Length: 171
Image (cartoon, rainbow, N blue to C red; front, side):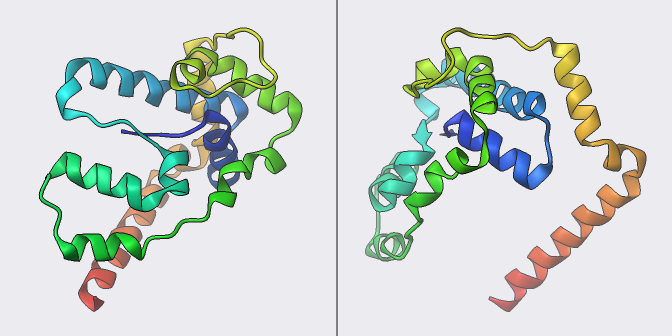
């Protein structure tokens, strides 16, 4: 399970998917709760990986992931891992995107999960609950273009699948 600071996730979701603050923060909470439920049910089959640690130390973290999957690492896999170099500067990008009021909102909505994962809220001092109905309405609003034109969503998914197939054929 790959977990990331909810402020970074919210910032990315707002930029990439034009989600509202409620939908973006609720998205993180939903996935956090699913991850914790899965961890309880299948503790021996689940590895928690923090996105920030993966970006800061990719070789170390990817080796850990591969060892979790299959303890026998080959020299070829190690060579591939050495070529992966993400940029740690992206980890704090949310600081330049979210306003203080938005940071406080995300931190309060994701307060309990943040603390359990070791992310320290900077502005929020207590948790805030989002009503499930409000969360649903914000998601419907965010997805309204696709809900009103389902053929556009099918078209987009089909184009993405075709591009992936073409890419895999060329490599």
